[in-house]
Amino acid sequence: MADYSKEEFLQLIKRFGVYVTVKISNLLHGLDLRSIGALAGLAVAIVFTWRLLRSPSGPQRRRPKRPAVAPSSSGMSTLPNTNVVASRVCSSSEDSRAENVIDEFFLPVKPTLGQIVRQRLSEGRKVTCRLVGVILEESTPEELQKQATVRSSVLEVLLEITKFCDLYLLERVLDDESEKKVLLALEDAGVFTSSGLVKDKVLFCSTENGRTSFVRQLEPDWHIDTNPEIVTQLARFIKYQLHISPVKPERTASNVFSSPSLEQFFGSL
Image (cartoon, rainbow, N blue to C red; front, side):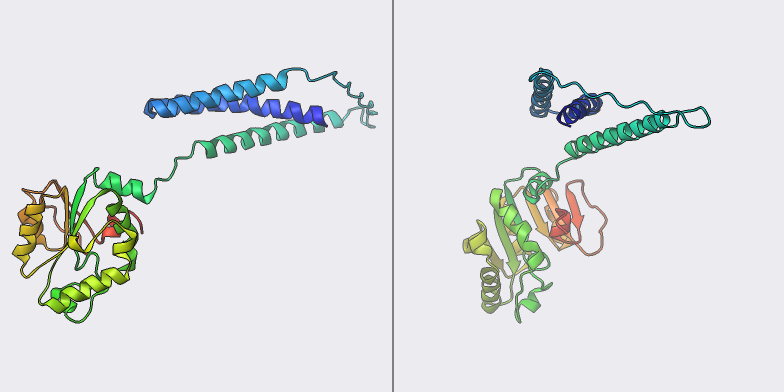
């Protein structure tokens, strides 16, 4: 039984080597040096294991001969044909099993949300973002006079942005009470404790032009806003912009992107 398992494993290794050769020939063109080094290390490990298993580990036991099978009444033996069919089925099953194992090995690794955020922001290091309609459930400054509610679905994305970006949150408010409501909502949501954001980077103004002025002074790599007029005005001055809108707007410039929400832009929904 042990010898049979060893031979079976050797056959699996051989099929693995053939299949890996095909996979590598298809993938090698798009790999970087680090990936190529990893595949080379894997190949060396496979060859080493194969040679180790091939080396004799002691006297081989002689298998007992199978008893001869008496011919059937028709003068033909049916058992050999059955053995051939079973052998082919077994070989096919082993090939399929080996291919499934290798296919799983070569499956692309799903990127993390942090990697997606860095990629979508093109490694931008400073981001300005409007609060209303993006971070908050409320859609107008008038609603902030009653309450301020942080959207729970945006918190994970917000955390990843603050890990490697200098983030500033901007909003127009109509009174001091609205400002207090916004800061309290952000604090209750854990924004100031779970991320690198501090209260000093939450800026308030009394007009839409004031928010535009903030953005131009901060000179971010990215600005995120819901107001199409502000997005249009800043297109000449800001490297990239994200326009949050429930309806896909007409693209005004090549450096302006659009999405129904901040989470959907980063594919976290």
